[in-house]
Length: 178
Image (tube, rainbow, N blue to C red; front, side):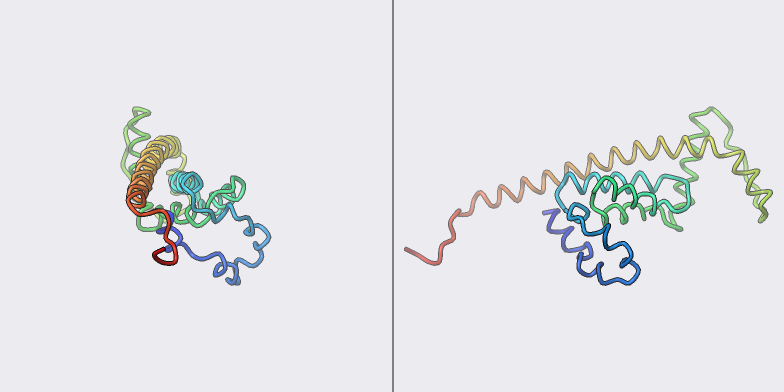
């Protein structure tokens, strides 16, 4: 069952309370909703984290954590989903977003020549920010919607399968034969 799996793989709340870097936030992290592993809470957290990884900004994890605190959704799931965009995957992810945005705006993607200077960085950002942002928003909405739909269906099927397995077992498991 997905809930048991999440409870097994997610860090325990008591363990996280012992971490020195989280002690200043102890007052914020006491809310049980931030650790709840029921389907709706986890799906909202997954959607928030996954959409957050498509945001082309530094500190996206801090942003989704603050939103997760405000919405009271599962914090570890939100953080894990936001880490899909990491230093290894960010390049291909944002390049795909840029290409999609260029296609949607009917612009030529152009070529890149790389220089290591702030002048080059600002000129490139000025040139690519519109297609990149549009591509990130569109791809983020589509991928998040599809992923949440798939995870929801898998969760429901696993729950039904577990229910069907339990239905075949006797309800009363007494202390012995009477």
